[in-house]
Length: 288
Image 1 (spheres, rainbow, N blue to C red):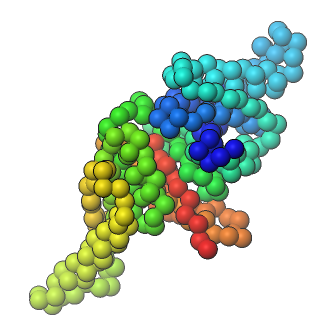
Image 2 (image 1 turned 180 degrees about the horizontal axis):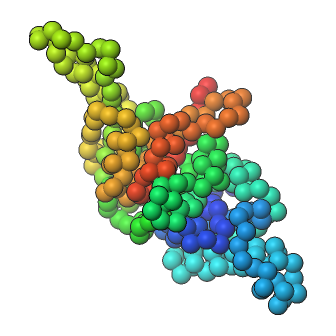
Image 3 (image 1 turned 60 degrees about the vertical axis):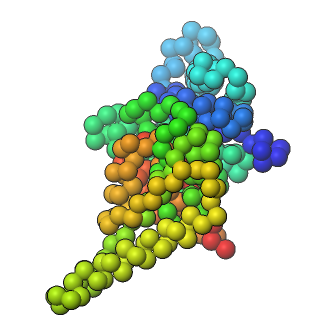
């Protein structure tokens, strides 16, 4: 299978947040002209199916798997009738399944597990683990709003290395959207000075360096995409979470380090995954 034919993979579990992720992914698959692959891992959080299994005379987990993928496929077809939909269910831990699936996916999509209030800010452990290890870009769809992929709109990208910026421009071109490129900066407290002629100089230096890094990251990007630049003082995760309030998609990077088996997510990606208002794309950035 060529890279242009790789599917968009969605992790489904029968919950409403995962079905919202199916909606978002179906829209994205339509934009990209790609198939949609819906995957259910049997060892995901339990879902009521015992009564149905008893009535049908089948093992409860088998009924759960069939019901979950069938419901998700129907949802995808209602959303985008012209998108090719594939389904699979596997008796494995979801984290392992989805990370493996990400090796042969154009995009990996999951939902959140929040249930409103403070819980809405909390990301499920499956999505958090997979976001730290996925081999392709991963989108976590927030469950608290209409996340429809619409033409136009605004894509926000936290500017660090090149991979998230390239992904942001790709998404913007697909949607006819603009890009808001954001670079946060902070001035260490130890660099402050009481000299009246030097007051504010350290801060201006850091701001200037941030602006230069922003311009460097945008160099060579497509000229047909409208770009808005923002250099903002503050913690990057807070600045980006605030920017997500009126964005259609927020994009951040996550460093991948060879032979490192811990969570490879970083504070910024971890923070926005928990607190973004809009869907978040985590784009892997590989060290040599």
